[in-house]
Figure: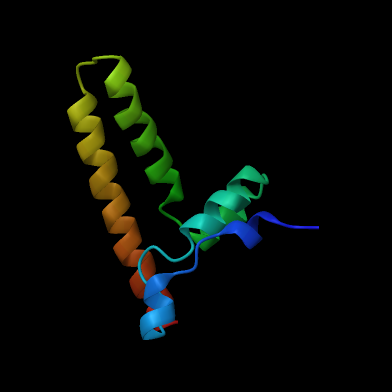
Length: 94
């Protein structure tokens, strides 16, 4: 029986250079999220909980115009980048 992990793309950075990039874990995190493993998804890729709302807000701006869309996008983007960088540093130092 095949699992979702069988269809995931390999990390090109890890294959070429031998170390993980800042995006490593995103696919596995999304897979865990869809399986209902919310804590494990956070542990795998902490920024997943800011990236999903960011994607939803960006997608909704194509359908609806709302007043604070740019502020929401900026705030979620900044939070996502900070979380990605901090979690990458923590992962590398442990």
